Amino acid sequence: MLKNRYDVLCLGQTPWSLMHAIVLRSLGQDVLVVDDPRWATEAPGTRWLTMLETMALRDLGERYGIGALRDLDPCLRAANLRVSTPRTSWASGDSVRDNLTEWMRKLSFLNTPVLQAARASGEDALKADLQRACTDYLAWLRSPPVRQRARPAWDSTAASWINEFHHLCLAEHSAPYEGPEIPALTQLLTAFASALGSEVKYRFGAHELWPLVLRMLSPVVEKDHRWMEHELARELTARGGQTKLAGVHSWQFYRGHVEAALLDSYEGVVCHGRLLLHGFPPDGDALQCSFAQPLFMGLRFVAGDINPDPFEASARPIVVGFTSSPQLGTDIPAGVGEAEGPQGRLIVLAREVPGGRPEFARDAALTHAQSFMAPVLPGPAWSAARFQGRWGRWIEDLDTSGEARRPFDHHARRTVRVLDRDAREELAGVEFAGPLRPRHLGLLGFVTDLHVGRA
Image 1 (tube, rainbow, N blue to C red):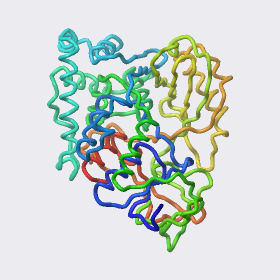
Image 2: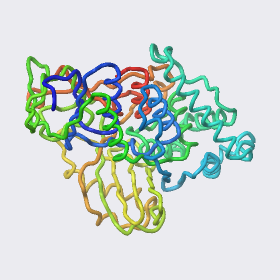
Image 3: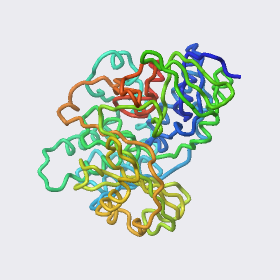
Image 4: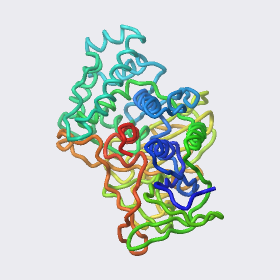
């Protein structure tokens, strides 16, 4: 039975909203998670994880005694990541050594004596070095000096070969652009970030490249969304929190404040102190979100019998991030493909415009994307693929390289205004939450916020 009032109402049931609710409950808050299917959208960039994210999740589980996070193994399985451009491609392996070898094979500037010696040292040593680097980076990210003020990039304590890898990538990426072709590394980094994150980025400063380098060297795993959601919901309930499968019929406003939700269940009106939106408002809802940065919607297309490579039949799930030099910075900058066995899904990122609907951009997006999809994803006749509407949103990070070199607050949050759709006035008592909220580091920033109590 639901209460009449909660300290916090989390709208949209995902693993991330449930983690948020468990942390709030641990801090003594009465919490209700409303599982309205229209809001419970899994954010892009949260299905595929690397060592950095899994270690952060396990640390969060240890801090708050969350069993489903302390023992993540049942909800993870090995996956393959591929990042592709018409001229260069890269594929992840099962080990740190596999990934280092592949980067050195595809990018000649990485073939230095230090990295060659590291590759020869064996997997056990490389994995231990990467684990130590991730542990040290996460401890630094959660430290009070970083939380309280803007800081320069991580003063790395990593092994010499990891420092060398970062230094070489930063020098290559920061080199003056001479055109006409954008350097291969920059294209690959954009494809990598779009596939494993919720942002579209074209420039990476030293502070942003460090976590990306740790992820580039790590094997990739797929998160079982349903298993994790089920286990976290069970733990929230055991702690006295509540979940409710119900739709939100309408909202009650008073003087620009969201006072309560009217559920389409017999409980009716539920009042709250804070309302946290863990998904984007559906079309037609009274609440609307306004981001300062441009957004991209993922236009989803589905095709079967995908062959040949890179979507060959495989026992493992595959994610492919792809782009091309002419597409970077345009209204259709990148795409993400996902496949398991012979079936595949293609997500083309298209800039979102006010009043635009996914159907309006469908034909143009697929036609425009052919120029870089054909060399990267050979085989399927994507023009005949079935359109399945919008899936997720990506946000464009427009920081210039000069801005990226300045110290910044790793835990700064994006300014997202929640508006009354009709009056177009900002509302109080409601916040946009989830992995897109942190200004930096996406999912990693979100988990770090929870770990340090910024819930």
